[in-house]
Image (cartoon, rainbow, N blue to C red; front, side, top):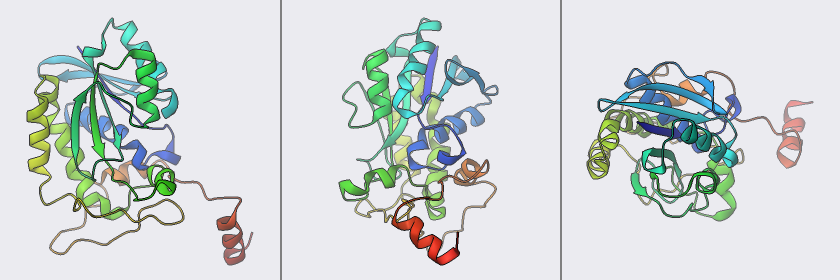
Length: 253
C-alpha cells in the first residue's frame, strides 16, 4: 500500500497559492482515480482508493506546511508503512513552471514541509517536485510562493495536473522515469519558456499575461485554479502598511 501526500496550507485563504500545488495535485489524483471522499484523520484529510491495482491512500495534512511531518508520521505509524511506501508532491521554486522531477531522498531545499517530514519520518521517500518557477530575487520568494496562480497560468497548470493524475499509476508501480517522460511529453509547448521569469505584483500575485495566440482560454468551471478559489478568497486584504494606507486613500475606510 502507498501513502501519497500532497502538501499545502489549509483554508480558502491559501487555496489557490502556488505553495498549494501539492493539494491541487492530490485532489486531481483522487478525482481521476475515483478515490473515496476525503475524511478528517491523522491531523489531515485522507482518501482511500486504488492505483495500479494496489490500495493507496491520499493525505492532505491540515497542520499548516511547517508541521506537515506530524500528520504524515501518524499515518505511516498507524498503517505500519515505511518511507519506501511514501510519495510526497510539493511545489519547487528551482524548477520552471510545468516541469516535474522525481527523486528519492536528498535535502529539503528550503521547503519547510519537506523539512518537517524529514524530521518526523526520515528522508528515504520519493519526492515529486512540481515546478512553480522562481521570481528572480530572494526578496520576492515569499510573495511568489504565497501568491495566487494567475488566470493565465491555467494554460499550463490544468494540463499539468491532469497529466500527473493520469500518469500516477506509473509512479505507483515504481516507474519513476516513465512517469517523468510522460509528463514532459504531454507538457511540450504548454509550459512557459524556461527563461521566462514570473512577474509578481505588490500582492504577490503573478501579473496576468493574457491568453497565448492560438490558444483557447481555460473554461472557468474546469480550471483547477477556479476550483481552488471557489470556497473563498485566496489572499486577505492588507490591513496595515503602505498598501493598506494607499487603499484607504483610494477607497476610504
